[in-house]
Length: 291
Image (cartoon, rainbow, N blue to C red):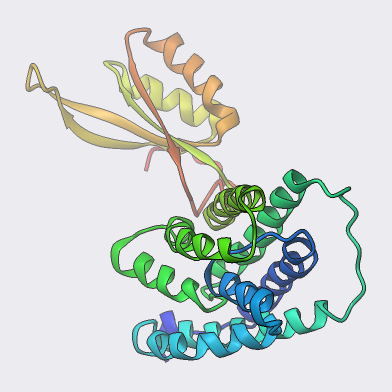
């Protein structure tokens, strides 16, 4: 089996937990407060409202043709994870409809929409981080992400707009507006969960005192630096640029270091969506030299 097709027990566990969170929000927040949803879940809610069909069964039935598409395009591991995710979603939808739980939010639709987005977003985010989906439009969104780099959250939002528009069949405009709030929060939480908990900032420094600045960064921040070859656009003069990745709380310290050594230095500070490796996902190893 190829390394990228390796399946892990941890992934199945997180997919199960994510499906449980998403189904919980759907049953105890969306349905109770008459909020719609996007994707296949939204279609299932439409069928529930019109024909009183159980979402646990309709989500599974609707996913069958999409699973065929997923089998051809997503690869063995993604397909297995998706089948498992769909099974878990249907299972938890069935379970939560039979467990008496009451969430008292005093009929506040703003709170309902926000909670639904947070619960569903974290649940789906866990599933996506594990390489799986909960089926439905998730499959289509993952295909777009794989083929064109469109983030899962954005792809889901586009498809949700279509399903949500159709949901006006059974909900009014007021409930739709709070459903859109739910969709927005859901998208942000999915992207946040996928990006990871370790935020960072990338720093690019142009200075005539590169070696002094680099040495100070290593000594005071214990961060490694990299020299990149650059060339001035006006003077065509070759220069070295310092590249360094730090945590957000270290930005002000970095600025003070650079300003102390070279007040004419140019800094560019960029957000980093995700970073893996030394100093962020495991312990920093102190070093005395550049790399």
